[in-house]
Length: 230
Image 1 (spheres, rainbow, N blue to C red):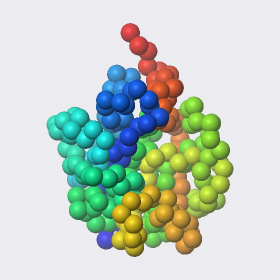
Image 2 (image 1 turned 60 degrees about the horizontal axis):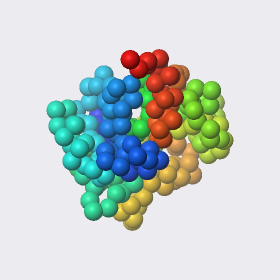
Image 3 (image 1 turned 90 degrees about the vertical axis):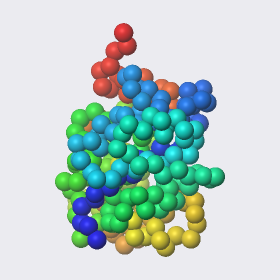
């Protein structure tokens, strides 16, 4: 098994229901922030890594995303007839991703500062970790009002609890996917098993981050990166 990830999964299959009218006729990854689709902001983080395999999963209005990605080096994993959630979607895409650990990246956030994928790569230690999650301090999570998801000890080992916010980027080993019987499941199921064995870790992000899961998130993200409409 490879020690360092050579593939990345873009999660792009969701319905984007919290976006309301903005996603009635287009998938959420094509909603624009600062004049560019969300998925292009995500690809800006991916490109510098020069990974041999990048995959996006599609379900809602897949033809639009497929057309947008047709000129980019992104393989497509179409989920039909059912959407498979993060865990099921990742397992469905394994033939395209290959073996070994992979990056996963949500496509509904905007980042400002260091590249979170580079931070993950710097701190990844496969001897100790089965997954390494990017975690955002509350003061750097623009517009976020939740209590947080994880607490990290001095070594970076994670426990669930109010504190840091999961930012939607990680490196994860895929071995445990084969042990799940359900076809539709969340990666939280794998994280819970890793928590039990003490092999779930987090890396704190040093920049600012904004979840763009709802219309206000577009405004917040544009203010965060200093974008001005003309």
